[in-house]
Structure formats: structure tokens, C-alpha cells
Amino acid sequence: MSTAILSTRRAEFSLLEVCLPGQPPIAAGVILRDPATGDFRLRFRRDWESFAGEEAEVLSLLADDLASKLSEPGAEDWLRLCEDSFSHTLRLSPRESILAADLDKTADRLYSRHVRPNILPFVTHLPKYSARVAAGRFLEDNEVEAEEWIETPENLRLDPGMFIVQITGHSMEPRIPDGSLCVFRASVTGARQGKLLLIERRDVSESGGRYTVKRYRSEKTSAGEEWRHGKIRLEPLNPDFEAWELDDDPDLFHVIGEFIRILD
Image: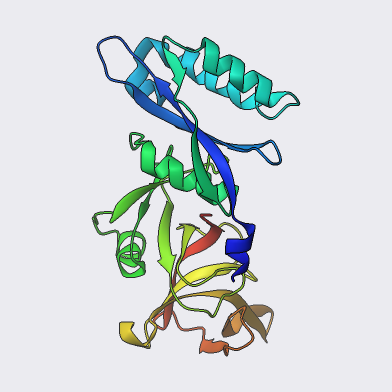
């Protein structure tokens, strides 16, 4: 029997719904509770202004207050009070039972299943591209279409230079597992040395691993009173893979973006 099955427990979830005049209830968030520990996980939408009009600010404050109260002692009593008192603009659906091996991942899955927030580009959502399309967008300034727009965590401040790419392969494990959705920023701030970069190698075909994430290292050599780059070393984090050494030739590789984080 696997560890995941052994650790699975029964949790409860409710939907926070907004009821506006003349409209059906709108799912605005998910509240997940582990009865055994009393732990809560909350996922609320952030696009209040796009659908709630004049009520947006009040609803946002109420959601923030609910999240604050559920992080304090006595949260269960507060939740039951909300269940009994919410009946007009805000209401909580009856609790449903669900099996949860991981509260965070279960809350994310429930949010994705039940809540459909509006896309606010570079405010709540980032575009997802293939590495090849991202290279065309940020290196060649081509007009490209995003595969999809993905909602990002609230604590990630977005800007128009950021994008998402799904990384395949094991060379950057354990930090970047195979299949991870990763956030990158097209403009690399400061020196590249030691940073994890999304790189296009021009000396190999796409089928041969033309696009990769590696840690950037460069060796400088002295040329009189000046210093210039000698070898560029692209290092994997997984010791089972070998580093690539390249001459400092701009035709051999291009940096597409700097790794920011994995989307959990």
C-alpha cells in the first residue's frame, strides 16, 4: 500500500458563493477543513471588480476578514456562525465530504473545478507558452498566441515580461520536477551568474533538446586591461546529467528568461 493512500484522510469543503440581484449564485471560493486537525485551506477569487460592480470592495473585504478569522483559534465556531448567518449577498454551501491526501493540492483542485474567475492578464493570470513560442515572443518580438492563461498565486507580483512554460525532463530535479509548470521572466535582472535560465541552444535541433533550463556559469579571461567571457557552462542540478560547455558565441545560445518559481 502506498504512502499516499495511507496518509489520505477525510476532509470537508464548502463553496463561498456570491448572490447578486437577478443573477444565479457565483462561486467565489473554496473553504477546505481537516476535522482531525482543525486546519483550513482557503482559495478565493481576486477578480471581484470584474463581476460584482459596486459590491466588489465590500465583498473583497469580507473575504479577507473570513480568511483572517479562519486562521485564528475558534475558527470552527466562526465558520458555523457564518454558515448560519450568511444568506444574502454572501452564502456558504452545505459542507461536502472529500478524501484528501494533501490539503493544499486538494484545495487547488477544488478551486479549479468549481470556480471560474475572469482572466486579468498580468494581474491574476500569466500566459503559458511552449519554449519555442516563448523564444519567438521574447527574442524575436513576434506576435504569438498563448496556449492558455493560468491563474497564479496571490503572493506572486506579475508583470508583462513574465510567462509560464511546462518543463519536461529530469536534469533539474529535485528543484524542478519533470512536468512542472514554471514561471519565468524574460528580462534577466542583474548578472546571469549562478541563475537558473531558460535557454535556446542554436547548435542542436529541437528534437535534440534545443530548449532547456540550466544554471548559468561563465568563466572570464583577461585580455590586457579588459575581462571577457571565455567558456559558458550550463549546469544541471541533477548529478546524473552532464553540464554543457559552450564558447561565448552569441549564435550558439540565447537566454529566453530567468526562472522565478514553480507553480505548486
